[in-house]
Picture 1 (cartoon, rainbow, N blue to C red):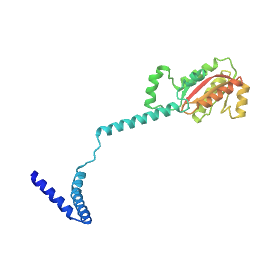
Picture 2: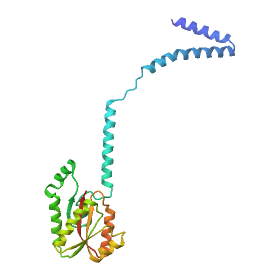
Picture 3: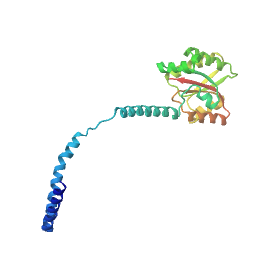
Picture 4: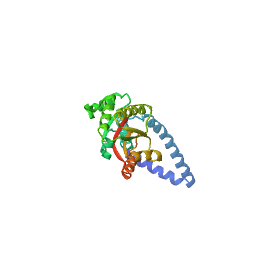
Length: 231
């Protein structure tokens, strides 16, 4: 086999030497084309054998990461939005007493569970909470006060009931919307000198409350406390 291989090699070299440069170039070109044609079916067969598959492990990992990212986005939105989210938040931030929380909506199951976990026995019925607010205000040595807050229809009706009960106890109550941007409301608050903030969960902005607190401090307006609305 080795001798035959050497003989074929010698004959091939002899044949190349007998060809002109042009003939040798054409022969090599033809040989390369034949080799490429033989390789094409092999490549096509190899490509047909390749199947694209996605590992279930990576699919599960992607789903978990997607859920985790969604939870993070929801959590970040909850943390970094600038509205009041808890009824005790103003007491902690501004050191003013909370007079009560008026729940004016039907709570869903998640909110009820959260109340039992975080507040336990602190949640009262709406009627009882109104009575407590009236009682706390009536204990103060004042004859006039101002409720400050943007109220919808249900909140206005509830605050009206509290005003009527306070009036029977000898306390005159006025309600204004905004003291920072409304000159008339500010003059009423400044003249009376005693105010109670009425703020709404998930709506009242902390920055706005801060500006009102600062204005009251500068003008020597007495902040008696705050009432939270959950609507």
